[in-house]
Each structure stands twice: as structure tokens, then as C-alpha cells.
Image (cartoon, rainbow over all chains, first blue to last red):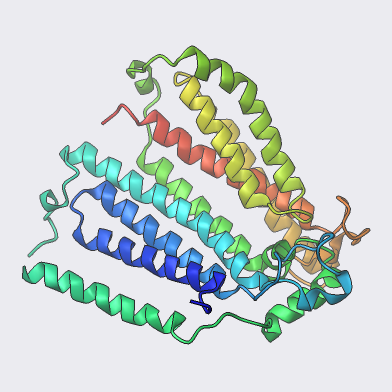
Length: 123
Length: 232
């Protein structure tokens, strides 16, 4: 139990969220539930990225009273994954809105959210 | 049965792929070379107290421009697909809102807008920045539309704010090529005193435009979805 650190816990949480998301993508029949599965997948990957950038016993990469300005390299965590996740969250929001729009248009066309009723591309 | 076991096999496969991440991972004890460079020379090179902002706006400024473009593309496709003919939204069936929500929204919406503006103006000093501030402004708009569903939000205003801030972002980048070291270089303006609001060169200016642009784009998506809610 002694090696169950903060970063390991968040990493495992992220992996579990990714697996739940993939399970939702593969098993759900409702289009909106598939979109929810996709967003869970997205969130899990964000948590994994942030926890990989974590450095033991250090603080957020913002220089204030808790960070010695002359020793920043030894007191903050990695800022790069946080910047990547910051952009990824916004793109995820845009992509989710786009998917929900497609769902809305599909519902207006066929009056159904069941994915089995959309078999135009099935051979 | 075969299908369920296939799904199970795919999940196990993903679990095995991801297991490599944490088997033997004991956490980092040091920054890698790139992160160390950003952390050590970021404060004097860029002058931003928030190192994430320094990475997003200056070191990786071109990626941020690309990201804003992706968000613009998503908003444009949403508004293209959900185009409502003028006058068609008049006959929507709207539920009347409760007195509590209506009154609370009148007090809270201006405060939420102000908080969003605060977050993107102080993006180089404290947690926050253009994207977060824009999202907060859009959430204020959601509250306003929940309380007053019949309210018409001006598409022209949203488009105008979005276009002007997008063009300004690119022009600042081009001005960096002409008058400073390169595209989106932040030495275009003097770096100022570290830790004050007029510092970090051009970062606050860029983040104000990014905040307005993201706020306008998300507001556009929300307005389009809102106007379509009873069409189906």
C-alpha cells in the first residue's frame, strides 16, 4: 500500500474512465449515450496526461508566494502536459457540441436515437 | 454471446495497452529537460507568473492559434447545420421559468460575465486564461437563456466579436514577425514588472482576444442549439 501515491491513484482513475468510455462506445445503442461514452474517454485521457506530468511534492506551475523565484526548476510540476490538457479540454468541448449537433440532425431526419435504425452504411 | 466476448477482448486489449503506463511507474522526481527549460527561463524570457500561460501563448503560440481555428471550425459547422430560417423560431413552445430562477439570473449573469473577464485578463498571473474565461462567459449565457428562453441573442454581435478578435490575434502574430523576434513573439510590448497586471509583454492582450473569441464561439454554439431545441 505504501507505493499508492497520488499520481498512481489519478493514473488508475484515468485508465478506468478510459475503459468505461470504450465500453460505452462499444455497447450502447442510444446515440446520446455513445456521445457520453466518448466524453468519458476524453476525460480519462486528460486525467492520465496530467498525472504523468506530476512531480512528487511539488506545486502548480504558477509563481507566487509558495514558489521560490530563484529555484523554480525544483519546485513546480511539468507545465507542458497541463498546457496540452488545457487545449484538449476546449477542443473536446467543441467536438462534443459537434457530435450532439449531428445527433440532433439525425433525430430530426428519422425520429430515432437507436443506432440500429441507421443501417445505410451496412452491407 | 460472441459479440459480448469480442467487446470484452477489445477492453482487455486496451487495458493491456494502458497498463504499460502505470506498471513500474513510480511518479516523477525531476522535470525533464524541456520542462526544466520552460520553468527556469520562462519567468525571465516571457515574464508570465503562470508558466502554463507562458507555454500556451508564447512557446506554443502557433498551436494555440491552430486550436482556436479548430474551435471556430466546430462552431461554424454547428451553426451551418442548425440554421434556422428567420421567423421560424417564433412559434416555439416555451415553458415559463420560475420566479427564483428569473430573479437570480438577473443578479448573477452580470457577475458571471465580470468574473469571466477577470479570469482572462489575469491569465498570466493566476490560474485561468482566455479559454477558461471564455467558457465562464458562455456559462453565464446559458443561465440567461435558461431564465429567459424567449430572449433573442444577436448573431450579428457574436459574429462581429468573434471575427474582430480572431483577426486581431493573427495581426498581433504578424506584428511579432515585423517588429520582434518572430510570429507571436511576446517582446512586442515591454515585459514590465514581473507579477503585475501590465507585464508579460503581449500575453494579456492575446489572452483578452482569445477569451473574447472563445466566449463568442461557445455562445454561438449554445445559441444555435437553444434555438433548435423545439424544432425536433
